[in-house]
Every structure is written in structure tokens, then in C-alpha cells.
Image (cartoon, rainbow, N blue to C red):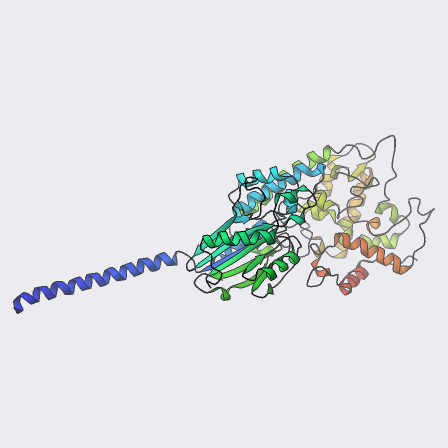
Length: 532
């Protein structure tokens, strides 16, 4: 009997060994399969980009830009899966754009859509500014790009290619994502394209439940992408406390931390990709473990991704934009009718004749060579930038197109601009120059103006950008003002260009309230010496 048992024991022993190895191999394969899905999911979001693909170049510390965001996403992807969404007011700077800038702004919008696509944008909720060229423009974007429009409250489902909701499954977690556009953000019939959010959401929840959504399941999250504004988002959170996250837009409420309404977390970030929001989800953990962080998109982030493909993207974008802008501006016509000449603004060279100490002071400030900033970042034809780096854009007393910013007594001379470019080509940052260096460039520019027979030079921030004078000054004067009235008037003019986006250091932490102490200090520093 023992002779028969021994072979069987050997066989069973080897089978057990074989089976245990199969189990281990299967467990290892399953472990590898699970590890292929990252544990952490980063829902990153932007909104209110207003058509901006890159920093304008005139901020003290530039923020935003597609190359910089690409670097940020690269860094985040080292520890998490990046899932990118945008909640609108993305493609255009406003909901109404001038016909004279339609070509350049539509090119910028299409190129931005391409850039966002290449960044990996997954879902997009349109805002009122995105309808600046109508629904047909957005229909083409929806068909051309890989990212999907996420709209849960369309009045007609056939209006545009879109998804009503999305379900993101990662490990134990399910994220149910919906997108809403508030009808009342529109001032025209576009509002009729959308149904009311509070009455639409309950019906949508029933549909999500049929897809497996369970509000009591700690691994299920309901994320609302909302283009409504902070106050409507807050009201929505109060009415539907089972929502987990509301990613907002429209009101540009700068929330450094989530604003919690019960268990509902509302988040918004600053416009133009200056900051990117990031909801961190551990897909193996219950939803109370979710966290939120705000990323400042600094210039050096571009270097995190080497080579960064968006550097060439931006360079090509600027080159094409300059061509289109010149074409647009060439169609604007003559500055004034020869039958109705309009007296132009007095430029700085005229003021200096009588106000030499003030002129000497001005020539030592960055204002006096402000246009060189645009030249050095290849934005010299961008009217949106020129308006704050020149005098009188869009005013009959000034100019309407970049080509007419400087006018000559005879015909325009190309060599003039070659000399101006050469003079400032080494200037990387006007702010970093010493006052004496700025003054040398400013004075040299005036020498070129005289040499080439310049009639009017409206480039740079000049005396009349800040001060007000009668057309017949000094022979006629405006009503006398007190020192306080003059100061208030000048400060008001300063703030039209030194907005929270361009000069955040002038504002409080909310970036809406002016920091009067900072403004007063800057005002004093930039004030010309008093008249003697």
C-alpha cells in the first residue's frame, strides 16, 4: 500500500506547488493590471481664458500661457492622472467683438481650441463670451477638436455635438460629471438655447441613477461644471446638498480655497490661466479624502517640459497674428477725412518744450519707452496691448491702426522702424533698466523722430495719458481743479490699464479691491516734479 501512496503524494505535492505558483502569477498579473490605473486622479480646470494663449509680456511677473500650463501638467502627471476640464468664457475676450478685429480674434480662438486640445482638454462647458461669433462657430469647434462639449441643459439636444453627462471610472471610484450653462448669463436670444438649471438637475439625477449613481456611495462623486457665477452656484449647493464639487466660472471669483456650503465644495480660479485649479481624488479612498489645491502658473514652469512643444506653437501663433492684424488694420481707412481735419493730441515732445524738468523725469520712467515691451514680445500690432502702451488709440485725436501710430511729414520711412527696433533689441525687461538707461533710449528715440521728420508719435505712455488739458493749451485752460481732484482723476486713468490682471500687486488678496497704500506709493514714485 505504501508503494502506491508514495507516487500519489508526489503527484499531489507537485500539483499543489504548481497551483500555488499559478495563484501567485495571477495575483501578480492582477496587481500589475491595477497599477496601470493611477491611484490619484487630478481634475484640473481653467475658465475665463478670454482668448489668451500666452502672457502679454508687460506684467512684472508673468503668469499663464499654454507652454507654462503644459509644464504644470507634466509635473502633476508624475504622481496623478491629469483630467483637464474648462468651464467657459474661453475663446474670446468679450461676448461682443468689433468687426474690425473679427479675423484676428477668430484665428486666436481657433488656435486656442487647438492648443487646449493638444494639452489634453477632455470636457468643455461654453460661456457667454464663447458665443461672440454665434453658435455656428462653436459647432465647428465641436466637430474639429477631440475635446467634448459637456452640456446638460440644452433646450434642443440636436443643436451642437455634445455629451449630456460623463462617467469617469477609476479603481473603486466613479465620478459623475455634468455641465450647465445658466441662461441668464446671456443678454440676447442665446439664453433660449438652455433650460433652467435648478429644474433640469432633478431630472438629470434620475438619469444618472439609472446609470448607477448612488449619492450614499462614498466612492461616488457628483461634479458639476457650471457657467453661472458664484451666487447661482451657491444657491445650487444649498438646494442640492448631495453635490460634491461645483467647478464654477463667469463671475471670476478668485477662490484660493474651496468655498464650502455644507458638504458641497465650490471652486473657481483666476482668469487667463494665471492660476489652475486642481481637485485631487484618491480613487481607492472614500470621497471625504478629496483635496483641493490652486496652482500659480509661473513663467518658469515652461522649463519643466523639455523640449516644450508649445514654445514653437506660440511663436507661430504670434507670427500669424501679426500678419492678420496688419491686414485688418490696413482696411480701417484713413485716420481722418481731409475735408474735416481734427486737431491731434499734443505729444510728449511738445510738452517738453515748456516743461523740461517734468519731461526729463518722464524720460527716465518705463512709461517713456513702454512700446518697446510690445516690440520685444512680437505684439507690436496687437491693438488690445497697444491701447495701454500708447496715447490716443481709437480716438480721432490719436490713431486707429498700429501703422498710423507714428505719422511723418513726408511719406512713411521703413528705415525709421528698423532703427527703433535696433535701438531697443537688447532690452529684455524695461522694468529692470536703470532710470539713466531708460532715459538714454527715450532721448535717442526723439532724435530719430526729428531725423526722420516725424509729425506725430503716439507710441509709449505720454503726458496726456495721465493729464488733461484744453486743446488750446497754454492759451486756454480747463476749469481749475484742486490738487485732490487732479490726483483722483490721474489715479482713475492709471487703473484703466493697471488692472488686477496686469498689476495684481496693486490689489488685495481678492484681486478686486484696490490696495490704496500700494497705489499711493506707486503714484508718488511716478509723479512728475511739481511745476515751478
